[in-house]
Length: 214
Ligand code: MG
Image 1 (cartoon, rainbow, N blue to C red):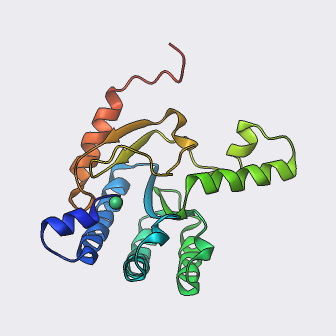
Image 2: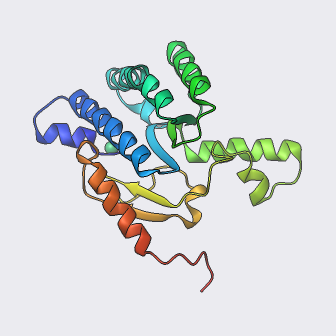
Image 3: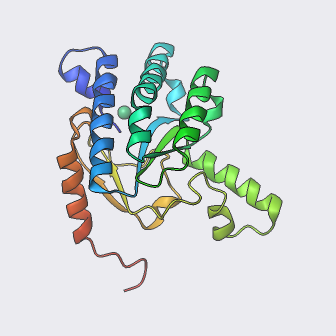
């Protein structure tokens, strides 16, 4: 989810406003994903590198995360949405960790759309942690690493969408993206609507996936 800052800048608004509108886009998109029957929607909310931002911006982002989960948790429960976190979220502030644990527990039995939120997430960090766990148990193979990733148990990644015109992965789901289709769009995250998602899925459905075969 990239482009909140530029969205705000274009309107001569503070960056925090861009992040707020980014959350509005998240809320709308999660509802749409559920209605479309998407099995999994993963959102890159806060990376291991985002700590480099100003204290002020980090606390704005954490505050928005907290308020979003607080405000929408009942809706997740009512609509069979299962929440899952990837990344080292336990390193976040204790009130947020408690809230997330509570939300995870309340939605654990749901089997509709799984909303995966990447928090304090970095793919290289995830792979290193998974490799260490795999090594402690036995031989390191792609399968044993895969089974220790934060995404273990989720279906393979089909489609990765990056907003805001950047064409890079920025440490997101590097391992999982091995055979994922990718879509890069210039749309800034706060402007990303369910119609953009539908268009991306449409484009995805036209791609021929060969997984290295021919
Ligand atoms: Mg950015």
